[in-house]
Amino acid sequence: MYVITFDTGRVESRTTLAGVLAFFNCDDDLRRRTPVESVRLRHIARGDIPLIRLARGNFAVRPKGSMREILDTIIGEVDRFILRPDGKVLRPFEVSRDAWEAAVAAGRLGYFPEEALAPECCDQGTLFADPDAAFVDPACYVEQQFRARFGFGTNGPEYSPGAGINSRHEVHVAYALQRGEKVRDCVLNAYRDSPEIGKYDLLWLKDLIAVPALRGALPADMLQALCGVMRHDNLAITAHNAARLVALVKPLPADRARIAVDDALFAAGIVPPPSLPTIAPPTGENAAPVSPLAARLQSLIAQHRYAERTARAHEEQAKGVLSERMLQRELRLATVERGTTSYSWPNRLALAVMERNVAQLLEALDSPSDQNALSKRAIREELGVVLTGVPAATRRRRIFELCGFSEAEQRQWDIEAAAAQTALRQSRDVKSAREQAEAASWRLPEGRVLNGREYVDMCIDEGFRQIKHYPRGSARVYYIEDPQRRLARKLRAKDGTLAYARARLAEYGPALAMAA
Image (cartoon, rainbow, N blue to C red; front, side, top):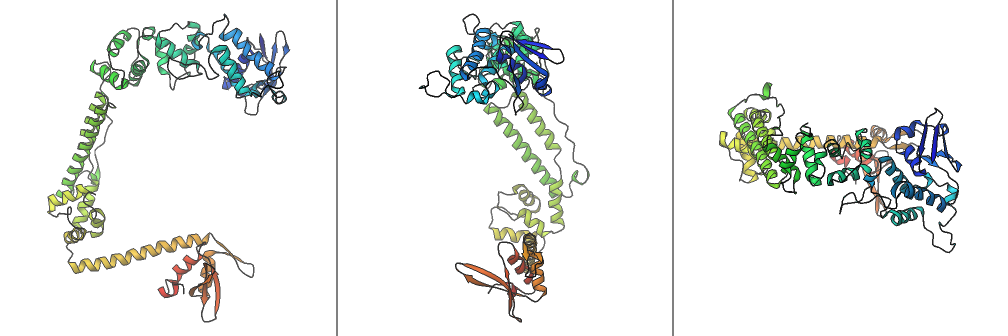
């Protein structure tokens, strides 16, 4: 028996040393707010046992003995007092949560031996008395001891026949109740009193504890689906409706359990039709069309979105991933959205046609036939201009004709647009080169330090107006020169000064910006 005494006068007792570790380290709040100096630990026969706090915050014990002696003592206590008190190995759900946490704490020593073994104890060498025996680390030794004594490893046994292993007590309790096995009330009380346990992934455990009629009544997948559907709609499973729910769900196919359960409960009128979100109609200038073209385009967009959404919903239902009531919700939502489609884009396109904004129309319509197809269809139906299934040059010419441009006016517009595009690109290049050059640093011979932009600006202001390069091995060295004074200063490509100098000199004439 281990006795834990606090400075406040509180006294706790545990039958195993692993239980002491679980008591401190499984309760985050207790671990954080308890100074190790305020606690005393003693064994009723062996006396005081040092208690320390590790760097990561966990409590650790320091009993006397060698590595093997300490591990054998801790695992042996779990064996005698918790998992095999009468010679038969108990399953996790047959012991209390606190007792199982003690067993898990003993298993943790394989991976965190510092919780019970001092560094000097770990450095003693082999765990075995035979000096010729191969070294076995704590992880292997603890795992071997667990399997030899209990038939499972430190990560726990299977939580359900044929399922995976798990060390969480609540998982074993949940699946034991689902199978209809007897679980004592003293074990279940830990979950009645602690609603936080399993609240993220085992919510159906609460239903099994509260409604005994569910225990052993359904396969695990079907039970989880039933509890999930009812909980999603804030409907309680009680002793009064459990029998009817089980009768509805039990004959259903096991695959796609969630969808099948949802459909069955909806058909029986137990779960209600889903509500729809409130969708506000468009307001202001987006609430009405500016022309018949805008009205037709809005109608095409609304119908296209409706067809897409309804087709996707039917496809998902056919695949078994959408229930009947969710299908009805999607269809109703598609209908509502069709009646509240905005005129924002239709009005923008219609105004561009009315204002003969050829730049905007080219951006929207001068593209392959499968792009912006609804806008092109509306223009064909309302204005008689065909922009699909024709060569690119023909399509572009028809857009200009739509805006009243002759072929000569189109050529002039293209020239001006290309010039504007070139100027915009040059402006962006100058900005990018300037920003890169400003991040560079240049030290002048007199010791003054300038950034790359200041250095290039100074050179140009002083008459350096020509860029040249000279070979240096397989590379090039760049200079900005003053031909009149036959002076040159270096530029670097990597720091942006070369690009910035070229951009600046292009303002004086393209020839000056070209390297010789």
